[in-house]
Picture (spheres, one colour):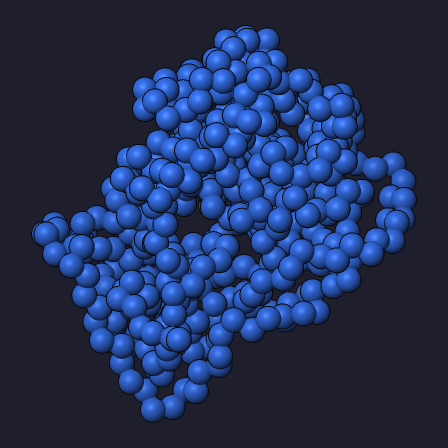
Length: 422
């Protein structure tokens, strides 16, 4: 059942204020999740363009978004895939700014389902290498955090101490993680520009053949709020924890061949450790938010993990995962070998909105997310109210746009709560 939500109306009004000429006709707001730093909205305008609106939930998230915006401007022409390109901002009285950018076409990936071989898996490795080959100074210029190897290890130790103090982490896991974090040989790596949340939800792919998952390419990478200079293993954590060994090997081999520096030999082991340590991050986030359901889920996940690996204090390398640590010239000397045929289907498609220029989707299959809106009988969207900001009395600068929704909607359509990659 479709229904109008205050959050969606607010985000539609912010989009209208941020981008000149943007007249929303339909909006969606994602369902709030504990620990999420942003409200996210999906907007369609009268020209059938699709937009993303991201509104920080607090001052900390707002400051991080400001740094991320500077980084995205520096990265847009330096990577082989797309990144969000902000087109406007709208201010709230408390100083937060909503960011608006065109929604990018693509399928979010399920890393566990990526087939092995020289297709999508190798493409993923090359895309990650391109990111890790970036100049550190770009991140420094944008004001992103910088952590060397020892600082990265120390951050994990601090989080582990906090988690241990809760009494909710199994002893076997505490022992395992303490020993691995004390093993200095595991923590010798060159600090690298990283994404920070390089998982399937933030990776968009397109496919030249709807029947062949190997035909995919990485279209875009979203969600850059955790970008920093740090441990490259953090960007491989989700892959190492969920994908089959042959797929991990293919990704890492393509990654190593495309890197400009030697990947360290403990990269895959440290990636699996990083994936495990994210369980304590989930626990601490749930405890901070006093979300009992999330707390119970995190505790249950820790118990399951303890049953799987709590007895192993060494973190042995997986025999099924191999890759060459020596990089080679990524430029091929000859035409690439033909890709073997694959009957593996591509990941289950999700809604593929058009880009800002309303390009047709190149996968050949598009699941329509929105219904085209008629452009007659205009009716304005009422100015949204938001009690959350009632106590904020600080005014914004005169040169920053304010919320002005009097002409935001040409033809009001049902607004629904939704979710998706952003």
